[in-house]
Image (cartoon, rainbow over all chains, first blue to last red; front, side):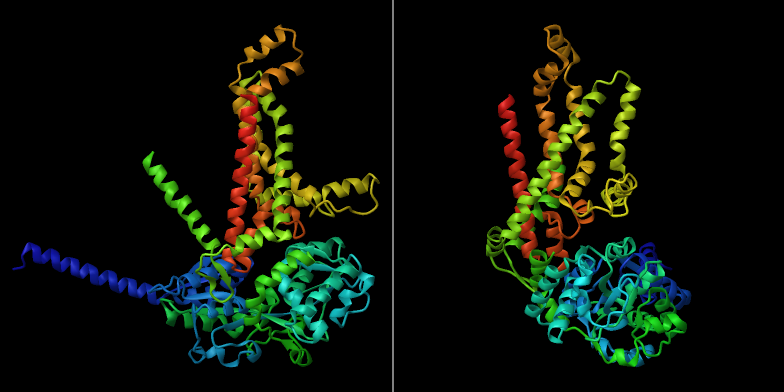
Amino acid sequence: MMKRRQFIGAGAALAAVGMVSGRAFAQNKQIVISNWGGDWNDRTVKFIEAPLLESKGWKIVRDLNTAPQRRTKLVAEKNLPRGSLDVAHLSISDAVYVHNNGAIANIDFKKMPNASDLVPEITTPFFLPWLYSTWEIVYNPAHVKTAPTSLAELWNPAYAGRVGVTNQHYQDYIQMASLLATGKLHDFEAAKKKLLELKRINKPRVYESHQQIAAGFKAGEIWIACNYRARALQFQHDGIPVEVAFPQEGAALQTFGAVLPKKASNKEGAYVYMNALLDPKGLAELCQANFYSPASNKVELPGELGKKISHTPAQRKKLIPPDFDWLSKHDAAQLEWWNKEFV
Amino acid sequence: MFPALLLVAVFLLAPLGLILRFSLDVYDPSTLMKGVFALDNYVKLLKDDFYTGVLIFTAQIAAMSTAICLVLGYPVAYFISRSPSEKLRSILIILTVLPLLMGNAVRSAAWMVVMGSNGMINGLLLALGVISEPIKILYTPTAVVVGLVSVLMPFAIITLQSVLDSIPVSLEEAGRSLGYSPLRTMVAVVMPLSIPGIVAAGAICFCLAMNAYATPVLIGGPSVHMMGPLVFQQISKVGNWPFGSALAWVLMTVTLVMTIVSATYLNRKYF
C-alpha cells in the first residue's frame, strides 16, 4: 500500500513530467519571430504566417519593433545560454552588422526546399534574402517631360529647387553620388564632392522619410528624386503622379530577409518559418501587395504589375550589391558629414 | 520613503551611471564600443562647431518657447484662477489639459497639416491673395517654436494657476484700496508673489523643450538640428553609443545647470 508521502511524491513527479512534455510540445510548435510593425507585419501575417504556418498548427509569437531595437537585442543576447528569438527580419545591412558582432548563425539552405532557386547576387551564408528593390530615379512626368536615363538628371539645373532628398536614406544618396562620379558605390570622397555640387546647383529639398517625400511629390514641391522602385510603385498605387526610371549607371540593391540568431531556441521551427517565407504562391501575392521583387527565381509575378516590379535581363546585369561591411564601418562618418555639410 | 528612493536609485541613477560609463568608451564600428576611460567624445563634442552650435541652438529654441509660454500662459492662468464660477474654472482647466491627452506626435502631425505647403495657413493666404505660391512655414525654426509652445503651454498654465490660486484675492483688494490701478496691482502685488510659480513653470517648459524629440523631427524636419534627435540618431541609427551617451550627458548637464542658475537668480532677486 502506498504511503501518503509516496503518493504525494508520485503525483508531483507525474505533474512535472506533464509540465516538461507540455513545454517541449509548445516549444516545438512555437516560433518566436521579430519583425517591423505596421503594413510590413500585416502583409507578412496575411500572405505567409497565417495561411502557411498558423493554419497548420504553428504558433507564431511576434516581437514587433524597429530594426535598431532588433539589432541591439540580437547582439545583447549572443552571450546568453538561450536567446528569445528564433527568426529576426532584417535588411541585409543590419544582417551584416549583427553578423560582424557574432550574433547570428550561418543558414543551412539545404534544409529549406523553397531556397533552391534564390537570386545569387543577394544571397549570403548568414542571411536569407526574401524581398529586394533597387535605388532608382523617381520623377513627375508632368514636369520631367523626357524619362531620365541617368542619375545625372538630378544635377540638371532645370530642376533647381525641385529635387527631393530623404534624410533617412543618406547612405543611398552617398552611394548614388559615388556611382555617378566613379562608377563604383563606395568612393566617399568623390560622393561628397558630387553631393555638394548638387546642393550648390539645385538646392535640393530634404525630407525626413518616404511619407514626407511622397507628400512633396503630391504637393508639386519636387519633381525628381531617388528612391526604391518598390516605394515609387507604392506612391503610384496611392495616386501620386510619379514614374520610375532605371539609371544607366546601374542600381544599388537593398534586400530584406531573415537571419537565424545563434542562440535561437527552436532552430528547426526557424527553418520551417524561413522556408514558408519563400513559398512561391505566398511570396508572389506578397510582392504584388508591397511591390518588392521576390528573392526567389521560382516566383513569377503576373500581368502588367509583374512587369513593373520585375527587372529586365538588361537591368539585372546592372544590379549592384553594396559592400555592407564597408558601409557599416563608415556609417557614423557618413551620417556626421551628411548632417554637417549637406542637410 | 525608502522603497521610493530605492526605486529611483535603481531605475534612474543606475542607468544614468551606465550612460556616463558608456560616454567614456570609444566607438568601434564592429564591436560597438571599446571599454576604455577616455574623454574623446566630450572633447569632440565641445571642439566641434557643429555640435556646440546644435547645443546653443537647442538652448535658444527652448528659452524662446519657455518665454512665450510664460508670457501667453500667465494671463490665461490668472483668468482661470480668478474665474468667479467654480464650474467655469473646471471647464477651463479641462480645456487646458485636454491637449495633453493626445500624444505629442499626434499634435505635431496636426501642426504639419496646418503649416504644410498645402496646409491651412498657406491655403488661407493663397485664397486671400496675400501670396501667389505657398511659402515655407514647416521645417523652419519658427515652426518648431510654434509646435513646442503648443505642447508646453498646458504645463505652464496649470503650474502658474496653482500658484496664483494660493495668492489671496484680499491682497489685490488691498492694493486697489491704496489707489493702485489693476495693472499696477498685477505688477507690484501679484507677479512678485507668483515668482515661485513662474520659476517652476519656466523650469518645466525649459527642460521639456531642451529634450524635445517628436516636435523637432516632425515639424523641424532634417534641416533643423536639435539635441534630442541628435542623441537618438547617434545611438539608434549608427550605433555610436559612446558619442550618443556623451551628447545625452552634456544635454542633461546643460539643462540642469541653466535651470538651477536661472531659478536661483530669480528667487534671490525677488525674495
